Image (tube, rainbow, N blue to C red; front, side, top):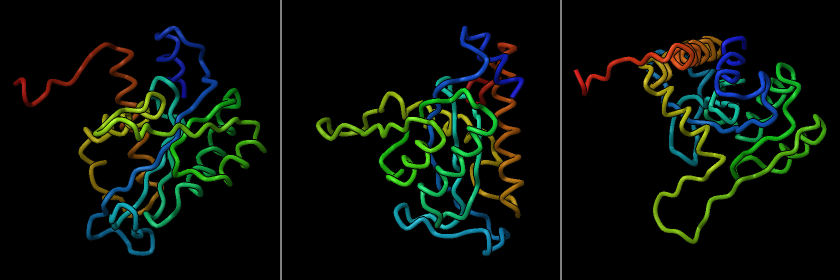
Length: 187
């Protein structure tokens, strides 16, 4: 949390965010991951776990939830929003995709968070990034550069949350120090 606050101040923002972007990602599980903590995401045809993220508008991770892939986005979103409100009470808006249903919006209203579903445009063909939702997608992409997050290797979901937070801290430290890791393509 302290690193996130420093990174926000360095970017000219207030320490604590007022808006978050939520999304979930299905990740395949390794063979040794217990079946009791995994499931199948029928929509994406992925057996493993789902990683839910809540990030601020700079893409800095505020909360992480790891569940079986069979858990709905709605249930993950409710758990994420509870964590966000507990640790960052300044948040008043949440941007989500269409996978988060009415129950999530009602839960947000109870917590004092205005939930806005940001829908993609069907009028333009092909891939079109959606402005608010792209923030969390970019964070997922950056986290995927950390080898241990490409596949779900952890036996316990709590360990997977810790791995995600460690990777997030490494990203924030690089932002604060202005350093970067040399790419294998440029070496």
